[in-house]
Image 1 (cartoon, rainbow, N blue to C red):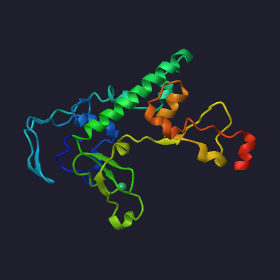
Image 2 (image 1 turned 180 degrees about the vertical axis):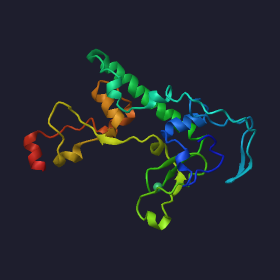
Image 3 (image 1 turned 45 degrees about the horizontal axis):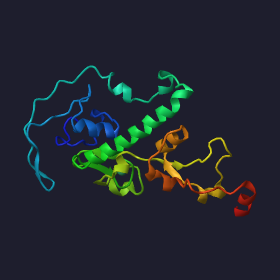
Image 4 (image 1 turned 90 degrees about the horizontal axis):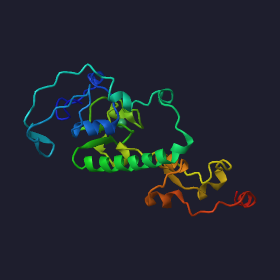
Length: 229
Ligand SMILES: [Zn+2]
């Protein structure tokens, strides 16, 4: 959004706005300038009483829309990235894994900080997220009983996990071993997908993930596991 405190997105005007990742939008509103995604910067802060804006802040002139839209934002596009980036050398993998998990932690830390200053809303029924003070009015909620709400989202304050979803997966203790089995699932731990990928690729992962990954659990051998099953 050019101005999160400006005109609210209506159902009819929804195609005038680009859909971009929530973390990117959060960073833009917090001051990052990306070509093609200008944002209204204010010289004075907005003043609000409750939900009512009593002073819309010192307005700066509208920027001209940029024509160069394929530079910075292209780096964020993962579409067909397998073809654009060569696979890493085997020897580089552990270092890349470590840098990736470090970056992941840094992004999560930054999102947590920014969300204390910039409001993010999440729909209580579906996974829709909106960066801005009021949510939007596009009637695209398809979740349970949406007919009763005329497709309107139910906006609540978002949590960090809704803005930067951890996407939990089973932790695989031995990626080269036998596949995970349903009968043993109470022995398996979980981790955010990025953490799991980085660990399998050789990174040292932060201590806080270790209990949920259940690294201390010894899996029953195949004979015993049949008894467990
Ligand atoms: Zn919804």
